[in-house]
Length: 222
Image (tube, rainbow, N blue to C red; front, side, top):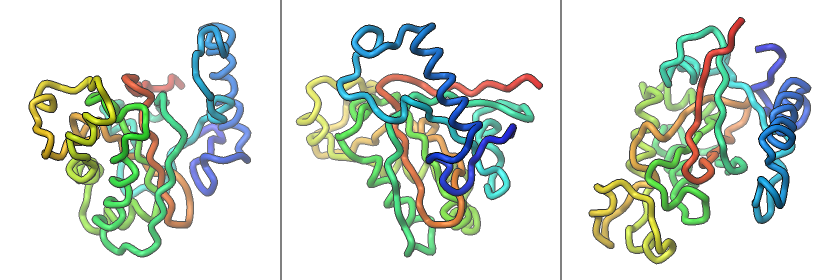
């Protein structure tokens, strides 16, 4: 992985490869794409992740195939670009079954306080720590099973979402839901992307997409 770090503290400092790549991408966005604050970037507060946000999967500790393969990219190495918020930490030390862990993950997803809460095509990148992923896999759960469960559990009452958002960019079938129904936070389980990141310890993360953006995964040429 060319020195990229996906183990303990993967989202934090300490990896030169992660930091260099994240910073290089930001410099391209600033000086080539014109994403300078107040000009091409109208972000109200910005975020520290904009300085450099790059992480590797922990493939050695993952019970499943790599993330790229799960989205149809068959290559020895690949890169995914996900325009997302800062990671929302999910701490679960107690659960011995997938449902206990994933109910907490779902609760982190099911909130109006995120940028894609009123958008049915929004994505959620769920970075499971190796221990949480192992709990799921040991119970016979696939990556798709995890996504499907989260799709069913990460929901809010339609009436609550209507009260929070005057305009909702929902698929037609979601527009037809009644106020008392529970609406999923995204329109399809495939919009919930599961990867394994981190080291020892039972902390996972949820990274909602930024509005209507979509992640892209492409192979890296050798």
